[in-house]
Image (cartoon, rainbow, N blue to C red; front, side, top):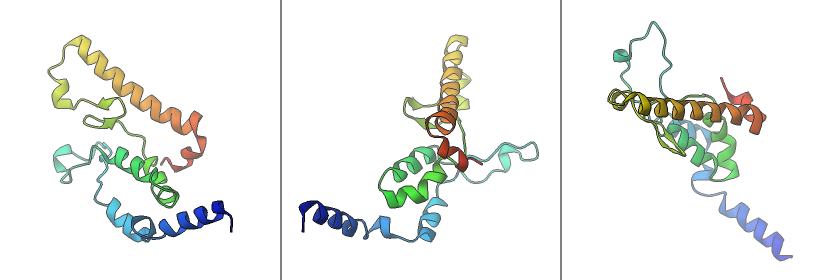
Length: 140
């Protein structure tokens, strides 16, 4: 046998154990603990929302989808099912300011914060429309 064949077989064997080998039902259970930000609706008051959303959900799902092919096939569509930007969200350029933090900003600093929010939403939209249109099918 050629060394490349052995290496490929070893990769398959290593990836068939542990976390990547779990059934999708367990991934769904794990995913249920990463609470998304509830969609704002005029009938729902923010005070009625009892679950605390996870500001790192998008980044966590993205990291899981980049771990290996078997995890990518499950988690990638969860990464892109929602296009969302909110205060406290982790982004590659840093965490976005929360509404409470924004109250104390001057006009100039508020424009910088608004720009960060705008850049993040545009970056996500650009990803699912221009960079990788295949991801657009996952967006609800």
